[in-house]
Image (cartoon, rainbow, N blue to C red; front, top):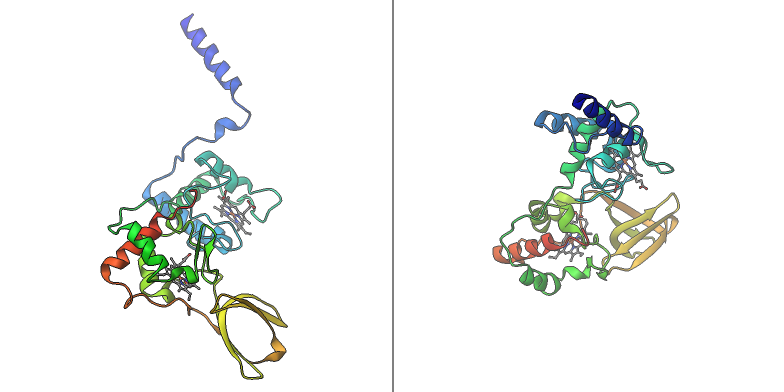
Length: 260
Ligand code: HEC
Ligand code: HEC
């Protein structure tokens, strides 16, 4: 009798589930080191062309963030990767078996895990340095305030590691984010302008110049145009900040996590 009741109740449980739902575990079942390594290889082959090799986006969304809009938990992440996002460029991974999808999903989760790190500096002093001595606000905005030549930094602490941020301050050219390209040009009447490229096509070029103004040129007006790949208008702060000041600024940047 007891056995019959047990059988009946598990039958009822099965019926209570949505069709298909029982197939997706709530948590990723494949999370070992070798699963992650395989997930990384799959990611680089299948996803990096759109999401960038470090997942911080390009044609596809930025995946290097602790919370993903369409993938709040592992099961939802699995679903997004397997089915894609209808009516967007995000394709379903129909060529992958479920295990591979879990391996990629596990790797995607590591991209966003720049969890609040324990950094030694003082972020309040760091914010002062950011505004005053470093004058970072000339080129960067935080919460909508500041210049626009450099990337917006409102969520930078959620996207980048302390190590990366420190490196960027010492040697900006080691970490030029995708999409930033320095251009230098000389017009036929002798004006020299440089800045960050906003747009370029066969006939024209738009850039944001070093005083943060957007400007537009017809290519036929130009005598010279140089694309300085890997160059940055951002100065190195190696000789500007002391070691302690550098730590303070990094602590401030790490604390910038937007609403994440
Ligand atoms: C052809 C380009 C392309 C490829 C290839 C691609 N994606 Fe995407 N992906 C996108 C786009 C575009 C979006 C944003 C869709 C939208 O509007 O929400 C997206 C969204 C996502 C999201 C949701 C992000 C969020 O914030 O919720 C995840 C997760 C994701 N992709 C993972 C992957 C993985 C893993 C792969 C490889 C198996 C992959 N994508 C391959 C273009 C691509
Ligand atoms: C003259 C303009 C300028 C100034 C001043 C400047 N930056 Fe930048 N910064 C840029 C540009 C442009 C980039 C993007 C290209 C690159 O990485 O070199 C950038 C990139 C960065 C990045 C990397 C962003 C990412 O998503 O990877 C960080 C972090 C950063 N800057 C922080 C700072 C801080 C902190 C200061 C002040 C101590 C500062 N910057 C001063 C222009 C500037």
